Image (cartoon, rainbow over all chains, first blue to last red):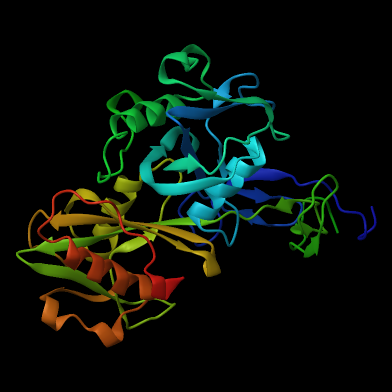
Length: 177
Length: 177
């Protein structure tokens, strides 16, 4: 094998010298793949009393309904990330009101920051990661077909704050601990 | 070179097949080092009207004063991370009250979650990453020797909420945008 032809990564679990935690270390090149929790940013977006949901066109949970949300990118504020995700997933131009909730999803090492937001206009359309998008009144929300537990948490917590201008952000409900 | 001897990582900037963003790719093994923003968790900790500060024993900003804070670990809630950092940096046992602020530090791709907290007892001591720790009344805070801008933001925002039990979390002040 020539030096110009990359081999494939060959990660092994081991404790690197000078460390006390097991890391993923590449046996081909010695690279230590430090893992960090990831940040998801998203929003509960309202228009005339209805809420924006997106039906997922990608795994995981393809075909299920979710809020516009996704991974924060490098050099991006949390609010900018939430606006970008609404644009990408629902072609939606949103105005962020304030932080609705922050969730610690320890099982998958995620912190989720969910904002309360409004559509600037009712013009929405499915982006490449959505099969369809829609505006749902509270009674029409497809509760049994939500993609993730935190989607249900954010919707219910949003509903509690509908008429409130000042509140502390929510965290994981007891059911999610 | 034998296959059992790891070569050294040899990262090059390139756009991987099927991607549209420049990534760091190892020429030795082909591994793509996706970078994500990092999460810092910390707290403004009070005891009888005084605030806990730690003088840093490590770079960056060695010798300057900071709040107990650090990187969230995998499989850890934001609150657990803030409690762990107070324990590690100031041997402090804290009770978290609520989220004081969330900051987007875009220049270094960080999201910081800062909590309002109390000491459970005045027993504090410098941990390995602190030169010394102390409890400071408002007028004695070493404003000119704070380690990072967000330390000053959190302290001032904390001071605004001292007598309030319900408030929305703060974000970057205008000076920090």
